[in-house]
Image 1 (spheres, rainbow, N blue to C red):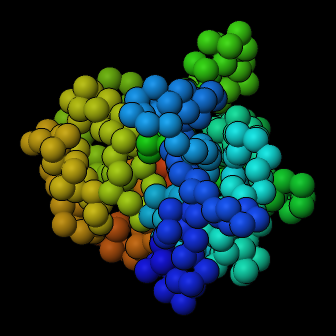
Image 2: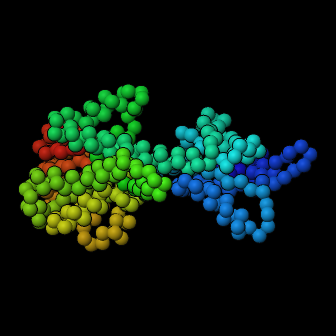
Image 3: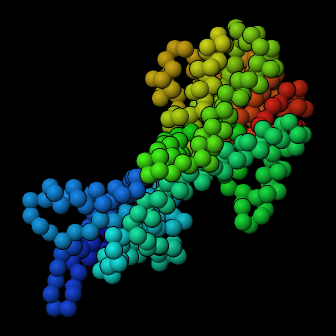
Length: 355
């Protein structure tokens, strides 16, 4: 820590000395176990019991829950510029508070809020944050599906409700749903933890249900375009494999479910992703054709499905796309293209909740 915040080395000397805190004329050493992981409620108490049981000698220690809120693809930025710092303590302890304040002083001096709470509340905060983000995603996707049937445009709807300061625009981007290692895992864990404690997270189960339907819905749209049972032998290009841009993470990536469904329908699949291809080759083997750029992957393609919102996909050469493709149908699973520009070039554009 002292090396990370070099100019604050002296301020962190307390932590480096093993947290020796002066109390009057006497000095005692406090050992601090800081848990950064997302864990079920009550884990910190179990950590204390485990340490007390396994320790060969009695010593003074404290357990702290300090959950991290780092997003894949922007973890370093999130570490240095977090929205908040959550510190869960077993009990009110000014000495322990001072240790934690000292560790995070370089951030709090820049205005990052630090919140002290009881240890169980800190454990719940992490789960609740991810559960709420997943809920917003499923909400906007459910609304997008309604927009398709009612003639509204989800982009305009999202912008309109996002202007409400109580709501905001973040995580209101309709598409093929959430994936990755955090949201699916944490949502499922919170539901199961609730069951164990006699609580049914009915809302979160609905969030899961909406998300599971979203990606397969694109394949259904593809079948509707070409005719049910008539996809066999067609070639579909995929733009993006990672569950989101700026990462190569394929865990619970919606693209994989789409690809596997297409393969079941005997569709020839060609794929491109800026960084995730090495991992995709391990998972998909020779069942698909891998391309080295997002224009060459369109060769012989009857349709294109966009699964990841990489920046390089957002302003393509529509004329070049049209020339490279055999067909002209695009399923925009991330709503990143301009429908009007695509249609000018004779492309049949289909987004999520867009007209």
